[in-house]
Length: 352
Image (tube, rainbow, N blue to C red; front, side):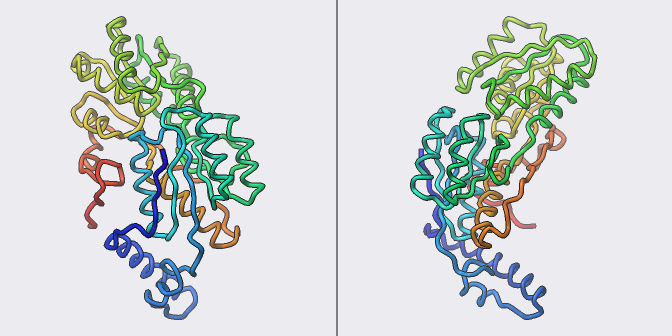
């Protein structure tokens, strides 16, 4: 699947808003630094906002699942950054978590002489060779969401091992003993294996009498829910159900809701704030989910590639941790208002 976010798309009000804001803010900063007044109009004539005119650079995002709702905030962010900076961004990869399809998509954009690549490095080896080939061809490469420390210039995303430890720390407090289960979609994938390792390390370090099962439930949403349901039916004595990824967490929450398990004392939590997960937390079926701010994972790589190109490689992309925050029912209220920053609407939140 290929989507393109084009700065020439006919949405004048949104583009004008972004460019006006960038022009005013950037011109003010440049004027202050240089000791000379620079008007927004002057900056606009030179290029996008306060920047000089540039070619219309084209970047590409290589994704493991191009239709996954988790990445909706990232896609909105790519759209926003594209309009702000006057670039074009292609959204491509696999629709079904196939690494070979991702590598093929990456090879295609390298051959097309794309101006920059952002790739979700879910596999520890598969992207090493194409990353080196892209860099050798003068094409900058950034990893996002999942990372392997190959020759890529930077990583934008969450430390997934740390997010796993965050889940584990909540787990050992809410379920100090008994049987718990952790669901994972794709063992071996860098998208969730570090998270599982973080959870299990905390459980082991706690020394508490917790028996932890690990169950693989795949990536298909219907299959995930059916397998969580099947596990519970076979293990009605389970004290806690936790998950390492967005789909698995949503599946856990739905089964918690189906059987009213929170009222029976079963604890549950996991990763990411899909729209359904937000509602499940608000309604008390999930205790928490760890947010990783996918909007930043779309916006920052576009900005970094733009600045790298604009400055002739002077400003290298910066690795950026997009955070680890466990959102509970006490914190969920702001997330209930639909907006593009969490991917639940195309609309922006009103400015305070």
